[in-house]
Amino acid sequence: MFDLEFFDIKLDTEVVGRNFIYADEVDSTNSTLLNKSNKYDKDGTVVLSEKQNEGRGRKDSVWYSNKGMNLTFSILLKDRDFSGRRINLINFASSLAVALAIENLYQLKIALKWPNDVLINGKKTAGILIESISAGKKIEKVVTGIGINVNQTSFQGIFKIPPTSIKEESGNNIEREVLLAEVLNIFEEVLQWIDDKPDEILKDWKARCRMIGEKISVTEGDQVRYGIFDDIDDEGFLILKTGRKYEKIYFGDVSIG
Image (cartoon, rainbow, N blue to C red; front, side):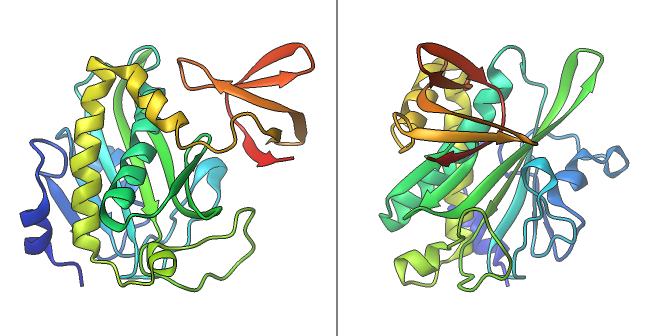
């Protein structure tokens, strides 16, 4: 059982997580915050659910999580400037916050995989899904959904990247309350970097991306591109080098080789 009082003691934010909704079961935490009928409109609202019946990752892939073992939660951001590259930086800020929290608490070496996966020893331990609601051309709300494999040690299914958990990699049972508070504490700090020092987000993110400089394939639907992962540009898009040409990749699944 998630100890709300213990979590609150560890939370050191001004906004993020101060409006906190704990649920036993929802369709998905992202959908819960995006559903207008729920009337969740306070910036920084966090929904944590022990079980998601329709948990999902990028491209509608299913996110499976054993009840009570992991962290599946979403953060609502609103009344903010989401123009330009800011919404992309929220994606990088989210995965960077997870990486920094795991490094700080458990001294595990993290690798970040473009655009939104968190890996330990080449295995996936967390993923990010950013969704938004717009009115005309203006983005009104952004929700960042985060799933972290915490104490689960067995995984069923077929995976492109083998899954792991923090417990499996550290050998220790993890206090979920401590981890969630640390992620939210860091996330609020890194969000401020978007205004104050946006390039620092990409710098810290790229320092943990082991694929830069490697030969990769980028798959999007039926199309596969091959080349060198040259860099990530200022907006967070992947730069693929093929021969003497450079191509900007906006989305896709990246693999070595």
